[in-house]
Amino acid sequence: MSDASFHDGREAPLNLGAFTPEDLQVISTLVQDAVLPAKEMSWRAKDHRFAILLNRFRWEDQQAAERRGRAYERVQSLLTIETVLGVSSQGVNPRERDLVLSLLSVSFEPAEDGSGHVLLTFAGDGAIRLQVEALELSLRDVTRPYVAPSKHLPGHSD
Image (cartoon, rainbow, N blue to C red; front, side):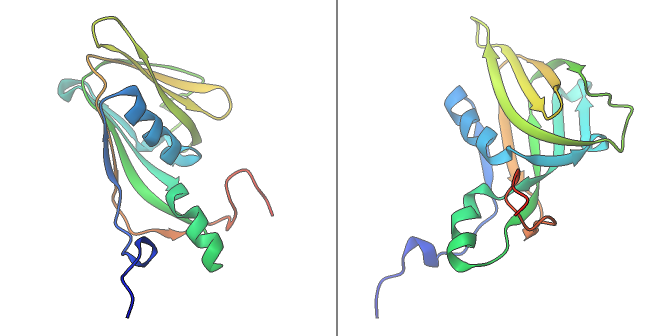
């Protein structure tokens, strides 16, 4: 009998927080190529919270899927940005509720006092800029993984 390895472990849903630009890089990598209808974005001004329900590619599972010869997966995740004071957008019309967006990256533009702007960049030159008091984000998987409809890596057709 041998000891269990990391690869034998049960896969758990992600539940991550970001309070530094380095933390945010991890979350940005994990949500790269996530897709969502515009109607799945919500800003609750009173609560200072902006949330997105997105369908993210499971980048953390890519190598295991390839090694085991199984399908690539996506999972629905909730990306929440806290301490939001204001929201502006360019090339993203929130009234086009059925418009499907592809998230490319999440970045932070700091100000001197710890406040700044969280920038959500979408394919097709769209962006949402969130004015925040402080960098505070979370990413939490809220469903079980499912087979990626395209069955391909994002950006690859075969």
